[in-house]
Image: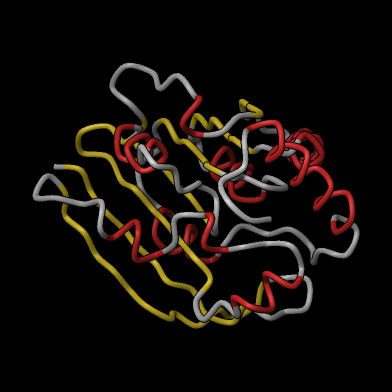
Length: 208
């Protein structure tokens, strides 16, 4: 995939990707970063961007959060809804891009985005929407895979440059935010179909 895809192309691409990979993916569990950073915090409203098969959203709901979970793949969302039902929790599943979501007044107490989930665009709409979704006093948690092999990713039809990566998100913040950045936190359990993702780059930001 080259260039910035339109919404319909994006939806179709990720449906195809999940259809091909869903049965090869490892057992779904919440990302250890969200457990470490959010576990034990008072629950409120949460937005999970690029929720995939829903492990983070289901975990948040089980902790008492009111969760809205977004993804562009209907295939992923169907699996996620099944996982939520099995866990006995309620999540609002929405097939959309973040920049097309109507953010509720006041935003969300927690906004979480894991791995490439936000598109570059000439007007920077996704980055603006990401920050605007966070309520005053709320937390933004953004996690990317560290050390991505760009050429290998492109050989599989996925171009990381199309998406906002770690440094792109860091550049969005101004003095209205308290920001903590950690590069290359080792994962106890590697992620990815082939276990190729062993470290994460992490941003935790609080809106003042």
